[in-house]
Image (cartoon, rainbow, N blue to C red; front, side, top):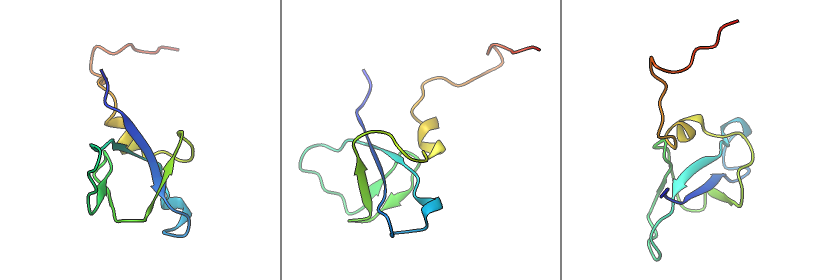
Length: 82
């Protein structure tokens, strides 16, 4: 079973557009309200900074995406030849 995730990015105007990446966050238990939210990648956000998204959209944080996979490519990964 996989853990539920939330998609959020900094609100418009809170920082430059090129830094408004869509981050992934673990769902917190009901009633828990931390002072700062930490994305899977480790970046932290203060209160009122994040815009919750209903679906993935916008530029993703690749560090967050990499941390959602259970697989890593190793020497036994398929090779593509021309």
